[in-house]
Image 1 (cartoon, helix red, strand yellow):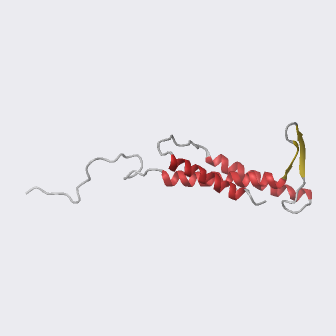
Image 2 (cartoon, rainbow, N blue to C red; image 1 turned 60 degrees about the horizontal axis):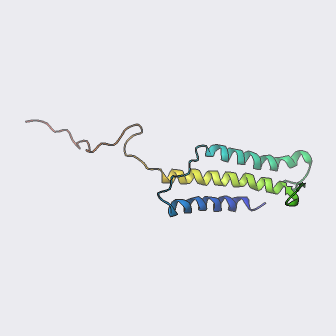
Image 3 (tube, one colour; image 1 turned 180 degrees about the vertical axis):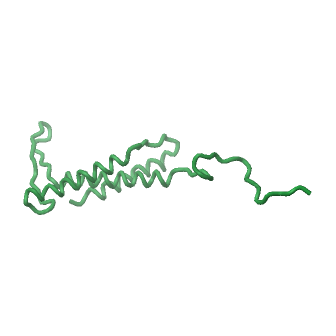
Length: 127
């Protein structure tokens, strides 16, 4: 394992580069990054934990090979699936952080809209 973390950071950097290069483009809508992070975490932990009942070392798993007509024989190992889970966790976390940093904040408590005038600093009394 070792490529999922960097791949997630590079993908997030690509999203930032897109936002900087095309500021007028509509933003990408990632409504459920929690599913991306949770699903990735479930996959990564599941692959790592799968070695326990098999009696092997953690992440020391075999590979499944399949024959694809155009590509030939392709091997998919447990480390690839683990890295895909790490990729999903890192990308989802970075997207959530970037959305939090890019969100506009309105002054005042939640649920209120700002007005054009500020409230008086002290209460004026009439003579």
